[in-house]
Image (cartoon, rainbow over all chains, first blue to last red; front, side, top):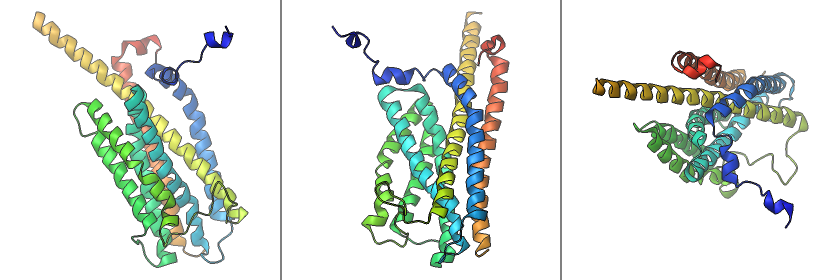
Length: 262
Length: 48
């Protein structure tokens, strides 16, 4: 018999649960978070300064194109954040991963915040370029729907006295809302929109000057690190708060039983 | 610089919102750590 068959790799659920232990998560995240935060501040700072002062202005849009260095990363994170919310929901519903619920509950407000930044900076870009703060364009409307999905998730998770029921309802909403992500991505191709089509794709060369592409790429990486650092820090706080709640409830139960016996 | 107020407002949002989330997370973590240290016996044995 081949020795590899005797030492088969554990099923995916088990390896996921290795990181489900709250104590282990707190230790690991405590070691990683300072470095993650420092990298996030450094990379985002470099990207934003490069975009604001050193990247060239657009020949048509002038300096208004610099809004892109905030708008595009926040738009990317609005979608990527929702995808991570959906992945946490799958982990929660299928494998009952105990940290996935907490992570999903903490991703929701951060994702909503980045989606709000995307909508607001898009509006600030649209006014000087299109002459309007808002148009009911397919891309803008689908991102607005994403914002409402985030708000719905935030409200639903916190709407129940029993947190487990809230997490389950939120997970179902997150999975249903995933259908909006391809609509956002392909809205500029499927419909005739005022919003421009994608300048960067996986299959073709970017239709953007390289002097603008580099600071945009650095801002996107930096904001992704910022998002990860914030969600990690919030999840750490949520793990500790859950432990506090558990200890207080256990203490209250002990006090109640002591009163009954005396 | 053309369209300066629009650019400045966009950058302000792009910096202030993540900063607000980071400050909130830091404050929550600090408060939870203090409370946990007060009520969790494992904290006194050097646990997390």
